[in-house]
Length: 153
Image (cartoon, rainbow, N blue to C red):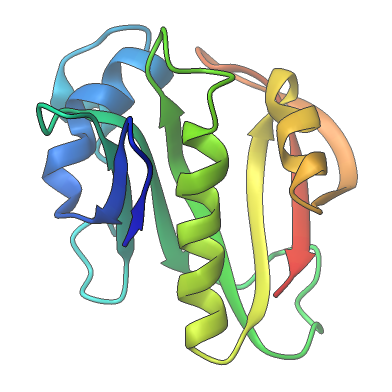
């Protein structure tokens, strides 16, 4: 658990993050719109930053999945999905702390390769965390432009 005077980061049930993920990542759709295949797998780890009231203000899902571009990379693959930070909390360290909790999770399990399909506006955020781009950008229908990024842990 990571604690800051403004928020706390902890592992949570994935359902606790659906409303935030839907608002930020699915154009304000209903919470069930944020559900992705595999969310309920026991191997998936979901972390959230919660404010003083216990409301999620940032979240990330960490899925055991090999990176399609780096299949030969040694170690286990982990995919980041559902990373979101609430309006009003961006630029205040919430996303960085939630991402760090996911990276700590991977490190505690022997490390490996962590990757994501990043929205292009989030590329600088991931670069600050040590991720690098791989492959060409593409447009995800209804969501927008993305690029794959990765880093070793």
